[in-house]
Image: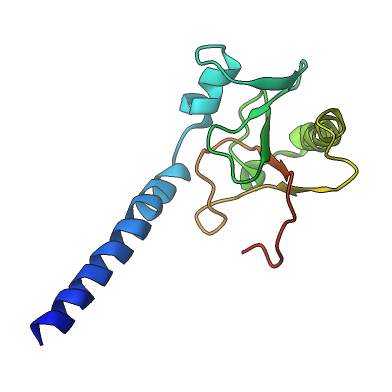
Length: 147
């Protein structure tokens, strides 16, 4: 009996540890002011990044925690919290992010084999920074379904 209870307690603790930090962090993300985010500091030049592209509207840089052999983030220079807070007058910016994703994919020689573009939104979408951004993932076969 002791062994079974110990195993269950151990499994429960591991499961809790694996979900709790993300859940707690993600619930805070929806309340985060984009102007106080890590990406604002990056746009302001306060923190370095491994940039692959920059223009007057956006920056593209290698993700510090890549989920694929090539993982680039494309972020607008204006603070848009996410798709759910996108205003009509900001919609052209989203189009530009996707155009830049295509250009960066070509520059990094990902265009022949293909790549995946991902936009996360909110808790269930696993958005961890409240700033609209596009993930460009490639360099390996992606799996389906992704979620």
